[in-house]
Image (cartoon, rainbow, N blue to C red; front, top):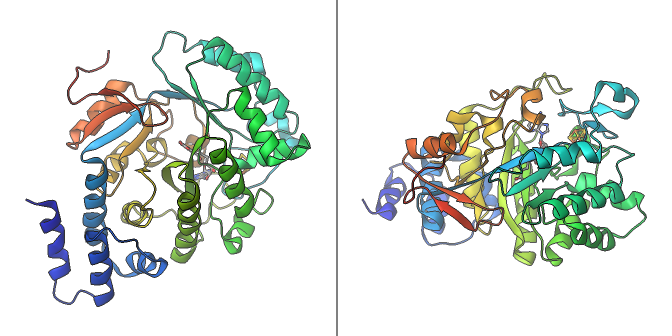
Length: 384
Ligand code: V47
Ligand code: SF4
């Protein structure tokens, strides 16, 4: 059936709110949704409605293509000077003997352990340790690039960058330029949480604010680097805080075009100071992905981070706007296992990830960080 027609029938439902019909028509006509439209979808639309429209947009942009990459994480430390209430992972500097701190040599050992593996990206992210400064990380990146020049380094959130650049007494432009020249290729999406101060002050008061986060990404884009953006949802925020967050990102993307991917991150409540806050339902999670796909019309990709959602829910997101499953990860991240995810040892080999995508009738495509196609698994044989 024509995809357009199958979605149009939602607009013919008797009793459909006139405002929802208007939003639906905008989507069919490729028009941008306003903040009011976005809020309405969260508040008044059922999951089948938003899901059908989000899937239409996903298929318009990408057909059945579903991207993943082969990557590994390095988490240099979980010692952190900040104290985000949702964080299950960090240890304060005063309690640093409970945490870990990797030396540059230990991190190079991790990089070398992938020497014969077809990984294309290393994702470096961790706590903010006062002794691991900008020059330490610049030197680490030079060593990584000297060892393996083609490995894409996606690293550091604006939380880490703001702290290390300030400490080095450089401007954001100078700091980012130095790190880029040392080998930093792109920025991951972390540290964004919820931008609005009403929520940010309650959950992560002491780290970089919305303006600081957005400015670092803007400077990175001006240097020709790409980046991702996240949103930590499903805790104490209201729907309008989510819309405010997405609008700020959409506005910056209009200006720079430097974002690749939007990644909604489901709040997990184990072993943190927000454990009393219940987690969102699967229905709410799917709605979040669908509205994100519809509202973030200038973000080419929408990612479900499977180590956080679990494999089956990640499969489900592929019908609600998502076209990217992140990567093989290889059990190298602890952030979500410590926060209560189903995935206690997140690792999937390429064949498992490919099978997961094929099982729900989508086309698995291995990509590099910037979405260049490495292999189309629909037409080529499986990896070994
Ligand atoms: O900013 C921390 C989140 C983020 C919890 O860009 C939590 O490709 C849920 O941003 N429940 C860091 N989330 C991870 C991140 C990321 C991950 C994968 C891929 C990319 C990418 C980026 O983790 C933090 C925070 O929002 N986080 N604690 C928690 N309890
Ligand atoms: Fe530190 Fe990041 Fe945890 Fe916040 S979320 S306490 S910045 S490691």
